[in-house]
Image (cartoon, rainbow, N blue to C red; front, side, top):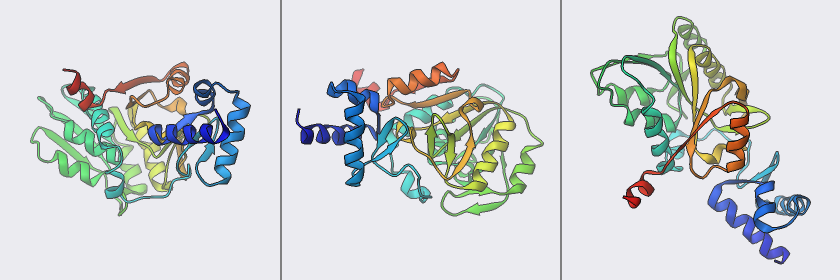
Length: 263
């Protein structure tokens, strides 16, 4: 395989997966990791990808704060599958926290409790979805409304959480870096997310596979603070192995159209 062919293959794989590990590329292309790193350096110099710790991605890992209407259009099938898998973890008479983020919208749409459920949330859109069901008590956190995420942040919301203890927190992220941890694009939201983690017995991260290897501006926590990750089937097996070795439970949510096609 020529240099040009190898570069084209790398870019095509990135288009399919969003991110890919150096070790995976070396195995697929049957070359050394040193060769792959040189390839990635050349492609990064041409502004065709971004390098992160041991991997490459198509977009800048230091993510900008995009509007929620834009984010909702990204990977909708994956987010729907993740939301469905997360909703299945809710038990009768449960009390849960739902953070902000577009994957939380998909979770909220899948929540159809047969018994009573209590939900604490910072997301105004999640509240709007869940208020249609009479057997759900919703506690809307208060504070400054972020236009980009249609959710609240501030010390008022943090103070409210000091009075609650819930079984589960469902949280979305803008990036998961194995060395740096979970991140979002807003410092106030990162602070609120940390308070949510303190108020929950179990922290469950809902994220599509494109978020691995990326960083937002505000750090939420290290990986040691989370219990479970629900993601899609495009995630690298090496990432899954690394996370499981850290004691994190990984749930792969099968895409719904694939499940239906196989029936």
